[in-house]
Image (cartoon, rainbow, N blue to C red; front, top):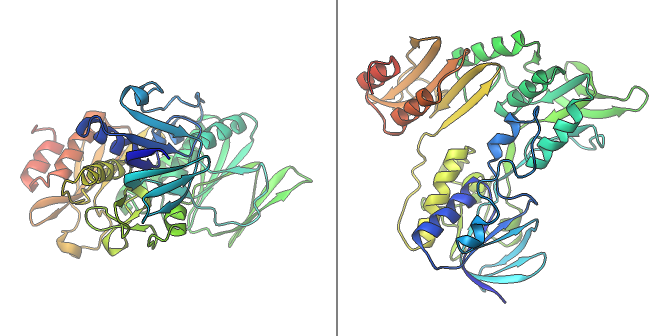
Length: 403
């Protein structure tokens, strides 16, 4: 039986960062990275931005294949981890059983599929690199696409479809697009951009089922306000933590895999990080940069260092319909909640910033830039948020008068 000092299950943002950290901080130790997908580990957030142009399967790979053996990492692609024996410190794969000293579960999240008996070949998610390739192939032959979900992934899917010249309708339960990430003022500008691009946006619309119409070759999307016909559907109704391995191995789960402030599970020498991890208060972060940070924290913990995950207010960005929307921290928390002041407004160069302060320090920030935003500006705003800049500095920097 092969033995590894460190085993990481999952090759998304948290798993990849954990491997990079271990390579840098624990040279000479044996590392195994298990990737359930056939492609090389890649940047998942690139998928929904590149569907219309298409791509090769490894176009978004974080590292070339040679990087892993060159850095002492054994990479297994296209295999699932089946069961953990935490007491014996073994992990069963489809092809073999290995032993480990320290184990990180970075299994991420999977796309939600709330509708039963979906018509075969008439829908896809937009979650994996394979999903993006499927949708790219479909777009060229579609007259009308239905996007179910109006969060960030649904908005990006609609933008890709419109860019391909496909008539698009998008629908969801929320009262506004990207409701969890944008405040009402910022979401309004996004809604205007969506409608201006010709997308039919249906808010407050509950999808009940999706069925095939063989006579017409279309699908019918049954909603609580009538039926919608389309050629194809993209399901973008969110993700749910992938906890199958943990649950089947007796590791406690709730929404996600339960962890403490150091990302340690109840099983000896087992950590969990990223979108699969559930933190105190039921928090599942669901952000790329947060998953990166958790992978770093978990890797240090696996090396015996005492580090706490502090849940920094990382940004979410959405570049669609010619604009840029930015969000970080609890932008929609009620005024006074957790000490946050009500949002203020700063208008600069076609960008509307909405900062919220807590005890005089920046605690949340959202921005709408319908004509786009330079990457440097967004990165500067992220740094203001991460270090909790004061009101005077925040205003000065966002107005372009400070560094």
